[in-house]
Length: 171
Image (cartoon, rainbow, N blue to C red; front, side):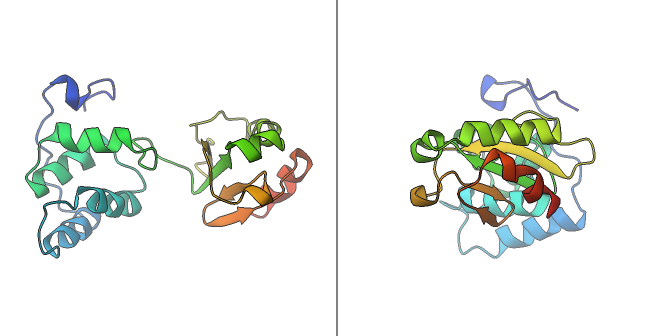
């Protein structure tokens, strides 16, 4: 397996994906084949692949590239450019702490520190049991409700460091 330091854009040679025939690969393949045209749909396909696999490791990127007839460097370029896409697995309950201006001013950094301390992981890491991961994002568009924390699809507003333990207990 190639290390993550091997970057497609750097011209390293990655092996063609081994016959990816499992149900998850088939789900993405069916999605691609259902498109009227593959042209212009790379981001859409990557969203589908990430929602199917949970993240976009190089093997999945290679699969998407091959299925869409694109160079791996192009797929990697899109995956590495957009912060929504991730090349590392996330926890079952991914935590996103908004660090936009309003959230930051209202104490998001203290909330983030409380999350890290409670879970004993850093930003970009996953708990040993695979249950939680922590990331930050720039803005969720709810500045009046700052600071905001998202756990999966749930949004928590006006979060204080003292609420962190109770919020995590819900999961």
